[in-house]
Image (tube, rainbow, N blue to C red; front, side, top):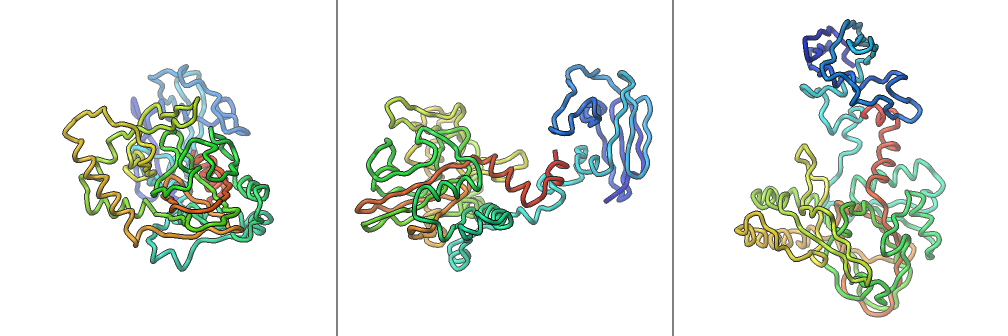
Length: 391
């Protein structure tokens, strides 16, 4: 780890040079806002005590000292004293940034690098864990969580064929997310809820919950019984497809990151759920990296608000080409679910579908929130210390 070679300040910023030759600057107000002394920050809960709005916007150092490991500042407002470690300064440098955003968690980017797949690359090495091991072993639980993240889905073998143990499996991972469908589901094709999932219709590849701002992060299914034919499930790595789509149709990829697509759930008598702000099909983070694909043709609402009406034919051409790509045999993995084996998948990344079926088919399962899953992933895989350092 680079040490602090020198530090100085002018009227607005502190400049720090590290032993590896990197130099970065920090605004005075930003440094004061991020003081972690006992007066400003409550360590047991990792929460701020300082009311930033009470700070003098023209605050500046009265004195600044440093050794190899720590920079100490005495501030002009209230003679407050703050200390900043070399690790903290390097990790949180922003002007310029010294550690890329996706490596801030202790530089362990490779541990969380998702493994995109096609049918050929995944079908012989399907990610799988064992029910009993997951329930009994913390290491097995961590392995399960990591496999979900890396591949976008995971199978769980040797699950007792009943809803009670299936629910226990879900809750071993994280809290169940309740919705207007309930919390843990146990359903058949009886239209008990007014949604095509409760029919025997063919349902094309999609993600669930495009009508929510907070789209479910994970979804788990367990086929408990089926006395008929059909009902085959498919999975698509939409991130892999988006990568290919961007290469083939860069203009359309950009278009689908910008055009908001409204959606709704309105089958129930007293339900009409719509996101406050419609989201695009491809959702990017501030660094331009793909973080979510929202795709559900069934739940899309009428699109009658266009900033430029000339985009209408382009949008339809764009989604036609996208549909052709995600339904290619090399991208759509078909798999027959069976009693005793659960499927869990990343609803922000993987499309799922179901072919038409006959007979009675009983399923159970649940949603899990994205943020809860990401918390478990980072804490278990990267370690609590690395995660806390990043905030």
